[in-house]
Image (spheres, rainbow, N blue to C red):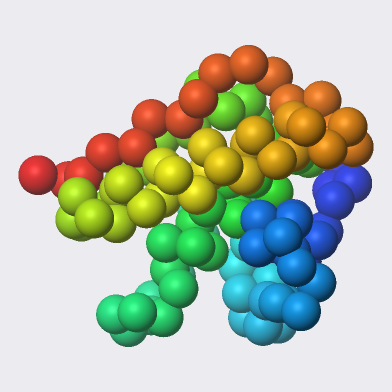
Length: 113
């Protein structure tokens, strides 16, 4: 099933501004094949958590999964809290946008330890 929504508009909706946009690398990572694993290697403070949040929103918006089928894993409690907050805020924005029907449910976000 081809994607109906691109990553950049979802990211801009999350930011509530069209002045922000993804880099081509970020966009490719978010829109990569939803049936295959994707490895993202980046340094501290480079936006990995935000990229993961937009990837989840892109997957849900395009019907590749439901929110309650998502398991987000990070290394720190701070990153887990940030990821959970960004995804929940994004799902709320998508639900209220009227552009797409988002099923009920919330993702599970945990740390490795």
